[in-house]
Image (cartoon, rainbow, N blue to C red; front, top):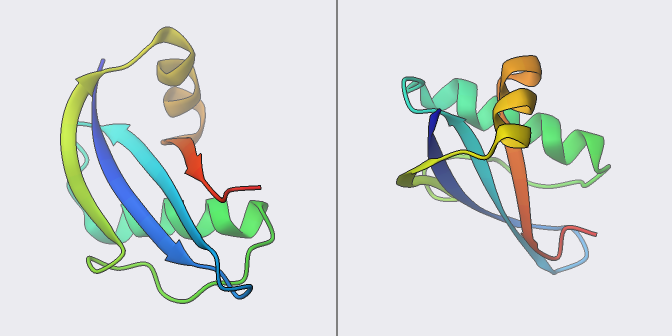
Length: 87
């Protein structure tokens, strides 16, 4: 499965900047849905943050997804790759 990678940076309330990628099926183009996935991830992490929009989250590239990623996307609609300050 080809996935779209949305590069996302979010300012946390403690001043640190989180960096994570939101992976979605390449056919998903609706930004509001992708932003909602990011907000859901932040809620799961109990991170208080500002808005997620084109300023914080933008399309980066397409790539072939690993089987574990495909499985999660089929269940949840998306997959998160934690990169910086996601603890």
